[in-house]
Image (cartoon, rainbow, N blue to C red; front, top):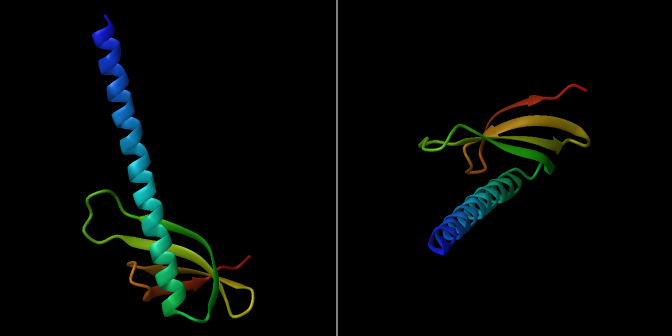
Length: 93
């Protein structure tokens, strides 16, 4: 009986480690994209939010960010992670 519990404990430990590894990787990638956008576009004063579009296994991943620029105007911008903005729209409050 103790072998079963030991196996269950090891399985749960592996799943928890895998979950935290994936979460850490995703957060690291989002921070890298945020830094690239700020570096490539000096008119952007801050990034309010960032999200990844697409699903696991897709070759090209697109990101959408809500940014502040030109004073306090907010824009939604799209990029593939290289910092180059592909499209943008002003967000009307």
